[in-house]
Length: 119
Image (cartoon, rainbow, N blue to C red):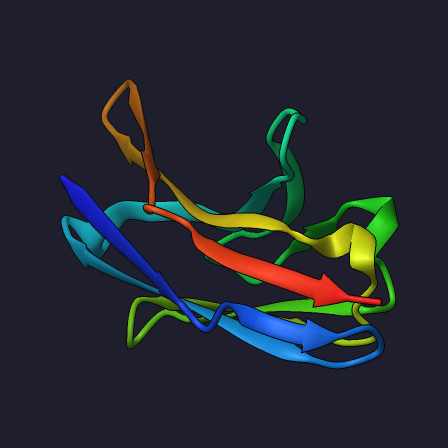
């Protein structure tokens, strides 16, 4: 089992910055891809950014150039630096981790942290 705990959400004005953190604990030795997803009220959860254990990143088009995902494998943490925030970035942000165990794939989620961007 893997436990994920997010932190760093809050209220910020448009154009501001926030940094989200996610700490993983438990069976973290075989974690592969970690990432951030978000869900705005009335909308489906969507991918924000992912990063593999080797450091390969992937971003949603809507955040490219503004958000940066990074990972500290030694500390089992993943971060999301969010700059130039827009009101449409307002959502609950969820940390995700994928673990491979033999032929099985396990998907883990944090509880979420709220980000509100005021105009």
